[in-house]
Length: 268
Image (tube, rainbow, N blue to C red):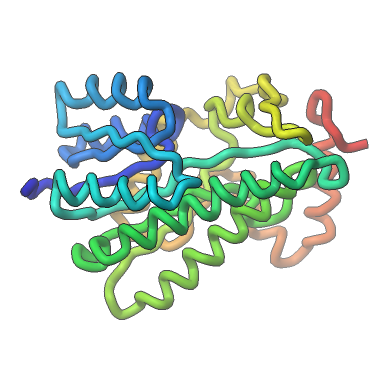
């Protein structure tokens, strides 16, 4: 069995997940890449395998059996799991009153249940290595965002689950990190769901000044290494977390104004 430390990353075929895969490959980890897109996954894992040890496992994290298979394939190959990064996620942009409830359900399936499924099957192995569980959250998981009700709900649920998991395993030295990258230059906004469940196709924000997936990956790597509990990567996120404690009503108005000013905003 492999003696290298093993990191398992969901949503690894693009954006932050792909950047994390490359970052850990550089650090001489064995990398397990999970995503739905088999072709992209095999392409990127194949490229990584020229420099490091990479395993691609096609996985739909909304499917419990797929998540079980992901962990089984990892253990079959490596015999251990040191880090699980629950990175796969999907966003949305619509008013709740206009939204088909299947959209809300899909957000919960991906962002919350995907984290739950992968974490439960990986947990015995992570406890054995005194390893790390990571949940990639958002400012939307700190304070509810208008026109992102499903996204906020899923991220709040994920955070509550991971905080409880941390406490349950307090004396087993399991490390649980919740990290909020903020707006990142990736395809997450292009694939965000609209009221009827179709992707919006374009980003409503200028992504030129956003943090790159590579920078986010480096910061996540550092936070895991330091065994941090909760990290917000952007200044706006840090301010949001602070203002929420003392002036939540002000934050409500600020978020409404900011989201209303987006191009083609559903807020009136």
